[in-house]
Picture: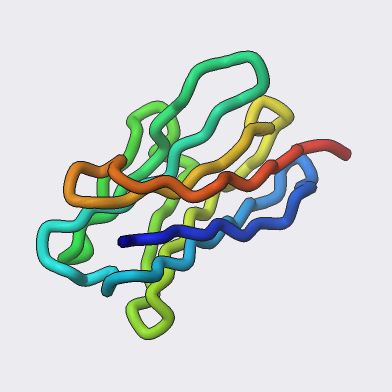
Length: 117
């Protein structure tokens, strides 16, 4: 069974770039027809899909965040990473990495990111 584990800085400063990483175990990140994504949940709000990555490297972005976000992968370490630039306090959220053959079959436990000076 696939497992995903997020890692992130916890606290980030406004205007800086956030990098959160997801380590995938239980299968290769390049396994055919597997999809991965980053989803976040701000306090008191619903889930927001940020960016996705396909088994072959194809990427997808939420149009509202596309100008600030970048998703990439490191196949040697079976990880994928989200970079989110120009942070504001509104980016404060729990960030989840998800994956599977239906995007959201498996979830990490989430990593809290607080944007504050």
